[in-house]
Image 1 (cartoon, rainbow, N blue to C red):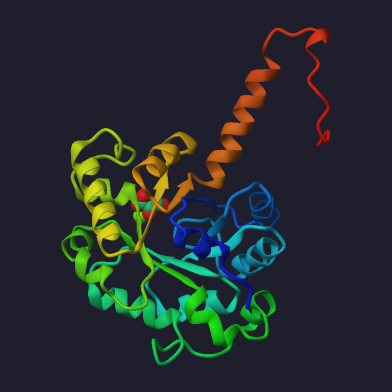
Image 2 (image 1 turned 135 degrees about the vertical axis):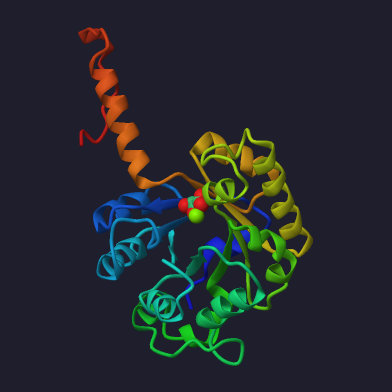
Length: 266
Ligand code: 3PY
Ligand code: MG
């Protein structure tokens, strides 16, 4: 089976960068896949698309160096199994509150005897290879999102779940349940403390810790804190920011002497 280079890098203790698809476009997913991320996540929770769009996005990502992973819309066994069959090499699952929910997530992602994943890996076989079944339980990365009060309360139980590779922090939802505002994860002491606690417990359990970041600068901070996976905001932000910066550049005073070096021109 094709190696999960995302998992390999995290196992080496390196921090990985993760891109985040919001649009439901295979072309855009392909662009992100070639941008240099270690992995790209097809976000089925807050992304503006459904399963029928997710499949061509995973196909597009398969032709890039980035590992194709998904954020499930919910801890829904049928949906998670379907996304894995569609070729996802990792699952991030929102709002895991306790051990039972973590076990349910793992069971959907692992074949027996570890879990109860049903066999029918249509694209898993194409992308992963003919020996997919033999290695899928080891290669597929499973991350439980910690972003609720119960998730924090039951963190050690969740982290001890057999077959779970790690946790992934959703700082916006975490801020809400802590009484703060989304986007205050670097400034509100309640958020700072909760994130430090979750990271420390994940490390104590020798599990991966990932986190959604508002951009590259926050990603650098999270990397220096010891996270294994930093998501560098999402596709909608990439497009809006790039458009604004091109508009701003076009309005600057310029002369023929400032002509930039040639690019691909497109
Ligand atoms: C959160 O910040 O709550 C997330 O789920 C990231 O998308
Ligand atoms: Mg969230």
